[in-house]
Length: 274
Image (tube, rainbow, N blue to C red; front, top):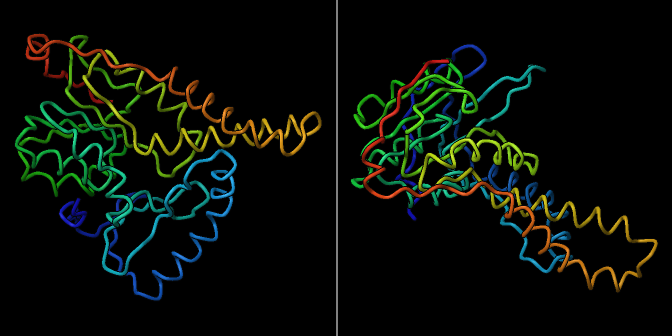
């Protein structure tokens, strides 16, 4: 996948607590960031070794110019919500490949997912639901030239749509950081749309599930350290990890795949603004 074709073209601006910025990362800054990222991944490598899995890849940043969506939190600390750097682009690869027919995207961000889907011939329409009016104001105008896209303001968990509404692909991308705690929210969101799509996915769900399972393996080791020897404990960690992965996947909401006639009958959506 050529990640550069998914770069965005959003002008700099500020609205409320949100801002779009253009930043240049030098080779020195990139090397420094990547070195810190490698050091921070030590716990991940150790946990992966315990369960017999390959460590998750480190988010490596390359030198160059990028666009970032930044938000100031309640403590007046600025947080990069997303950017069009290579790692973040590649984390949406599955959505880019699966997008077809009628598409629903939760979370506008920099408009990267919506624009990528709209440019595909196999995609007929793209509906984007974004909660923040400031993000809509900053990013929305850059997507006006793409006629397939409709952008509305609403909360992914509460916006109203027709009972017979049905999409071919639904993509949830409303989280600012990778966190195992996101899995619970992903389950809630995917359960809401399971009967309204042929396929749906959440940003980096697989990573969050694997990280959650590793955390629970570590908790299991702490519980068993009094009753099991180190050798016995390590001999069972792989089995415990796989069982935890199976349990997490078993509760994941399953999509309801309609036949083509049903899908043609109700692709449209009646939007009620939040």
